[in-house]
Image 1 (tube, helix red, strand yellow):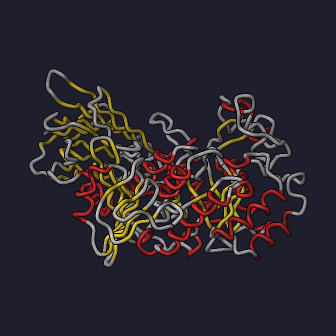
Image 2 (cartoon, rainbow, N blue to C red):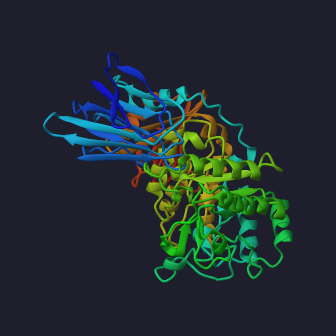
Length: 537
């Protein structure tokens, strides 16, 4: 395999790779750099990039992985049906905008890989790993070479969360929040997130009639006195109940009808999807205005932190890169939020749940998947694969149709246990039966926090399907099984006492010491209901 490095349209390096694991230094440059190499399509049946929920068991004609500081990271893995690596490529330049493109070449039976990075002041290292190891091992070893120190996350980052979003959207009121918060705290939640809708008076839900103008008022970050007439005392009341209090914000969006847009009109994008524009993070004056506004919310209202959304709206672009500028903006915002409270909570969403963001946030949430517990499961697994162990990974809020089957509600809760559970139902409307399911699984989370949060996670893929997710500690293992045929493989690597959680849609028949349904009631011997679990001693 030969690799070619091109800068300013000239080949500056070209050499052969002699070993199965190579580290190639890519020199700094005041112009864009292009790296080219072939990957033989030999025993390759699938690939993975950080943007994918699950590996793709298909050889597409073109593979494209775009990344920057606030979107994914520059890596791609090619492997066979047994998930054995054929070629893993990764660049340690996590901040700058990067594009990896693999074009299928039918003549040479190869993927022609092109890696593009903009001008950079620092050398970077390209890892080319062709060892026949499980591709996740290659990813884990590469991530270890980044030499990042894992932050000491605040204790509250591991708390289950109640979020207002799906339950009420922007129709929320102070009284509604307080009524739900009482129930959430009683069920075991330790954090309350007031999502979008707190900073304007309009009462609305997301629907086809409202979506086009949804963000038109975003950017001023003034509290709605209509919805929260006694906000300071309200926040204090919630905190006295044991709940950390966070507000939703986004530094990226400026609404068409915001007051601030007039002072930022030379620092925003011209397009206006959903009636908003994107801030240009490379304008330090404009960035400071937004950072100061958002950080001051925490101090003014004595909040416990912020949910920081839509950072991925700072679009990756090789020609006009914004990765470095967006990273600086987010770094300054994170620093200011923590200035008066070192344990302030900062939630980031999935597209920027990456190794580069580890020092800047305290919890990383799966992307929006209302009603879809299977995608919640896959997304949580995706973050675990990308970021590794001992990190507060939060589920997207579990949300279901009010008439949903109890077994499926239990599956929602089981899926959320790949991370830290988050709820967004109107808790006042839960039936006693549904509340029993939610309570049971939140209690299970509390009881098994050490293993769930600090065990070693193993995500097992079979073709393009997530067969199971397992976390193992020295004395116990917790298997969340999505594919019944993969149970022997899961049990083979499990250690100690095994808790087998049935995410599948049918009951499992397997020798167990005890089995339970989704409310924690004992089930038929050696039968694990869908949404239930069994214990194997």
